[in-house]
Structure formats: structure tokens, C-alpha cells
Amino acid sequence: MSLRLLAAVLFVSLATMAVMPKSCAQSSDRPIGGESSASEPSSEAPPSATIAPRPTASLLEYYNKQQSESLVDAPDCAAACELPSSGAKFWVSAEYLLWGSEGMYVPALVTTSPTGTPSGIAGVIDAEDADTTILKGESHFNDDVRSGGRFALGAWLDPAQQDSVALTYFFIGQGSAGYHVNPADNAIIARPFFNVSSGEQDARLVAYPNLVEGTVDIIAQSSFQAASFEYRRQADRSGRFKVNWLFGYMFAQLDENVTIRDSTVSLSGVTQGTAIDLYDAFDSNNSFHGASLGLSAHEEFGELWTGDVIAKGSLGGVASRTKISGQTATTLNGVTTTNAGGLLTQTSNLGTHRDGYVSSAWELGLKLRRRLTTNTSLTLGYSWFLLSHVERAGEQIDQGVNVTQIPPGNLVGAARPAFPGEKSSFWTQGLNFGLEARF
Image (cartoon, rainbow, N blue to C red; front, side, top):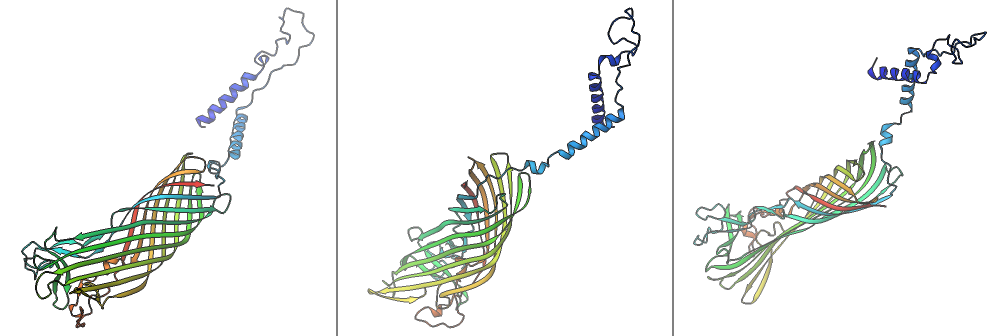
């Protein structure tokens, strides 16, 4: 018998004794009237008024019955602990994004060598005695932190708020990197490439003392945006915690471009006074469309704080378009002639190249929500997004050049530069600060 049961038996026994009439504890021969036996005796003694105590077995049965009834009548804790819905039918949110992205890789675009380096090897990568240094390139451009925004609109489809739909759009502001290289900083400036005709590394001189004077400008830009439509279905709920299934559609778009422009003037030789302006441009666009499946979890921490976790994947296809363009303008004695192609853009790779591939998008997110009023909240969160199999502008630069095709020449040998069609991934991540309202 447990201590709890023994205590109950003792309590009931004491309670029974407490309510028992005083006469129950006295002998049955004592007169009811309370007078002494010396008084006038009654002709007939009254019957005994004692109360028989409840047997112990009966007390145990009574206690067990009460316990069983209390357990049967107790409310379901899981149902009682659930918070009632707010009664809102719609919600909207706006967030400020502070995200960093994986920059696009570009090969070596501008080099230099110490003053006095022979012009034949100046700026040439891996050339002996050239001591070449890469000024720009062989690195990632636009990998800095940028601002953006995310906006969402949703509606519950039932009073219990178990089914809902949501439309979300977010973007990252355009990243732009600009570089200007001039002789004031480096007496020797060159643009490196691999000479397919000779099978060796080579370089186009942009600035070299008493030989040529010029500058190089590089502009690299990147932008990203995405949108989704989701149907959310409650999968499970336990008190203040619930899990939702996510089904929907995802769209994402990545745009990037790289432009290299150089301007030179010949200072000596038969070409003295000749001005050459050329540019190479690589512009890529990637559009993803896919079906999404995921899970989200929601937890309520008291009356003021709530938290969300989301994990989602999308499978579909990405349509990639890369446009390669270039031009060379030569001015001699005031007369300018133009030809298609620059240095890394020639007839062998000029044009618009289109491809389509199976691709996927992945998204993870955390959000902490602090309630301000019944229907408004401040939010703080973290997000990570990845898009696979995209063409990045910098990776479409082929540094191999068959110089035989440079105007006015005709191509002899391998058609280089070519369109690489390289595929890689793009990811972005960062912090989110927002405001949410329900109505």
C-alpha cells in the first residue's frame, strides 16, 4: 500500500471520528438526559445511539472509486494546452535583408611586371624573369555583403489555421565592382592570355614606357531575385508546437556580367599615334523554375515569443543564356574602323549561347518573432539559399586565343576562344530584420 493511499485512509478515518456524535464514544448504559444515576430512574432504558465505524475495506473502496472518477473526468492535457488561434485570416510581412553571396570567379585579367622587364615577356604569366603579378582577376568578384528585401502575403483557409497559402518575393541589391588600372600606379600594364598558335602564355601590352600608353577598366555586376507560391498543410501539433508540410512552386533568377575595356595609344614605331579601343563583354542570365517540397516547424514560447524553422528543396530546370560580345575600334589619322571582337572575344565565341539543365534550389531559414501587439510582431532571422547548375559570367571567359583570326586575319587552327558553357552553383545567406502583421 503506497504512502499516498495510507495517508488517504488515515485522513478519512480522522474525518469520520471528527463528525461522530459525542454520545457515540460513551457507554450505552449512560442516561440520555445527562442526569446522574441518583435521579429518578426511568422505568425503561432507551436504545443505544452509538454509530458503527466504517470498515477499513470500505474506506479503500471509496478512495479508489474517487481516484478513478477524477482520472476519467480530467481534461486532455494536449488539448487544454493548445493556444487558441488569433482569429486572423491574412498575414503580411516585410523584411530588410543583409546578405552576402558567393562571388563569381574570373581568371587573371590584368597583370604587371617590374619596370625594365623586356617588352616581349612583360606581363606574361609564368614567364621566366618576368616576375609577373596579377593585378585583377584569378579571384571572386561581388562577394561582398549587400542589402535586399523580402515580402510575403498569406491567407489561412480554415478557422483552425491548419491550411494556408503564401506568396513570397525577395531580392538582393545589385552588386557592382569597378576597377581602373593606369600607368600612374603601374608603369607596365598587360592583359594576359594563352596564345593557341604558339602554344605559350602571352600578353597584350596596354602600358609600357616609351612604347604604348593606356588604361584598363573592368566592371562586374551581379543581381539575384526569387519568388515562391506555397500551400501549407499542418502535419502535426502538440500543445504550442506544430509542424507543417510545404508544397509549391519556386522561381529564381541570377544575372551577371563582366566587361573588360582597354584604351591604348602607340608611342613609337610604324604604329605611332594609332589609338585602339576594345572591349570584351560576357553577360549571363539564369532562370530557374521548379516544384517545391519542404517542412516548417513553429513553436510558441509563452505569450510574446515564437520561433520558426524551415527547410525546403525545389527540383526543376534552369534556362541559361550567355551573350558574348566584343569590338575593336582603331583610329589612325582621324579615321576610325571597327571590327567585331576584342581580345578574349573573337568570331569563334561571339554570339548568344542558350542551354537548359536539370537544376535544384535549396533553402534553410530560422526566424524569431517578438509580439508587439495582438496582431503585429518584430522578426529577426537567418536564411541560406543555394541554386545549382547555373552559368556564371566570369566562368565563360576562355583565355585561349588563336591570334590568326584577329582582323584582318583568317582563322587557322583551333577555334579559340570558345564558349566553355561551365556550370557551377550560386549561394547567398544572411540576416533578416522585419515586421509582420495579421488581420
